[in-house]
Length: 227
Image: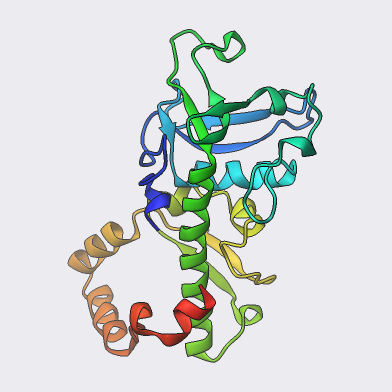
């Protein structure tokens, strides 16, 4: 899903310094407004995939986004901080996370304007549907159900910063109640270093390569149906 790498998202970027990687509500919530976390603790320059997922999950929790993915401004109090973040943009309603024109959002240096658009939500829905459909097809191919999963392993920067609860809330991950979610970071890089330095790891990698089955989702008739 390109959306998870910030592609096709209006203010999207990779999970690097300046990226909003988490959005949620203050605990305890005093004003009903959102909080954001920015990688590097600097002013926000954009939003990465993990931030996009947590943002949409938070707005679903606040009922500001319907389960179909549409903004529903009438669902919240017009006096709430969330309502004041809704503005009319060139392509329709936008939800402002960071705006240089808003004094309440200043933290010293001037931040970039970062907003979520209706088109961004649609891009996330497509990426989420593709990933979830892939997981469902793999479960079918393996002849198991989500309840049989013991562990879900996430790799890369996306997996490292992903809010697991938010991923479950938007249905990105199969609802496996017993599954533990482990984030491995740069798994490919660490694995490559491991097999170079350790003969046993190299032999294990060769063994796994011989038994792992590749499922081509693009040629799978069930994928588009599930998607």
